[in-house]
Image 1 (cartoon, one colour):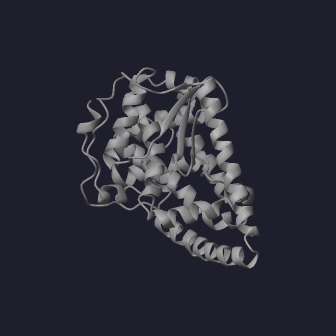
Image 2: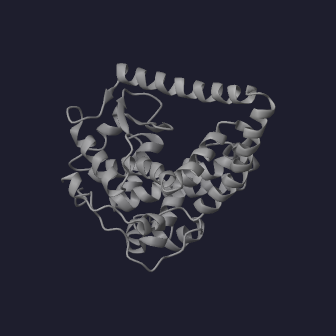
Image 3: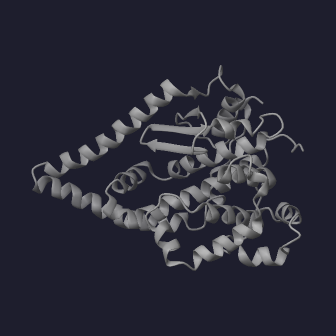
Length: 317
């Protein structure tokens, strides 16, 4: 497919794909970030620039670490391009076009390790790291939609922040580096990750493929087929009742994987109910009613046209 001829999602379509709590969490982040930024400016003058030097030291350290990481990736992995892994490169460009995301994003494929997929970002430096085992498990011909979901969920999370006024987004991102404010900033960061998963589903337009890709992210390709929804529902229930489950999420930039998994199902239940109903019919050990009761109830059905499928081929067995 010619990525230049793809019709991007409209702003309203993208807005409809965001997690319901994303806007309120961004507002909370702003309530903390803007006054903190103002106080920081005043404190900089009061301390004759000493505080500014401290902030620049933090920012510079993060920037240096990011550049060092990217240099190591360039020297020790394969960067996706027209020459190397062109199928993945085409998917990246198609996803960026359909989401109307114009910032530069590199994708690196690394050897086997503990990381399946990872997004690193700091101001203009953004790159996605994919495990070679994960890429190998998503054949671009027969399992294209899975790779589309993986790429689209990362680019989607970037797009969510890009949709905000850039100055405000930069303030929030900058304050996030000052760890004492993260209690109020990170809920927004976690919401953008959930929005990214939802945008990925809209782009790949296949709930089974999105869930298959998620299973591979969760436990790897060899064990993905053994993941059972009933077990994840029980895990999520146990975590929600646990103080330590809540506390472990408090200072994390990402939601728990079980939370993301069930949120994706809840989003499909609200927006793509027919696909959701077909998907859960495979589970004979748990009823549709039980699943509908246990998944999060934060999403509300919207009576509007959903984004049309643009990047995926017909699902192949």
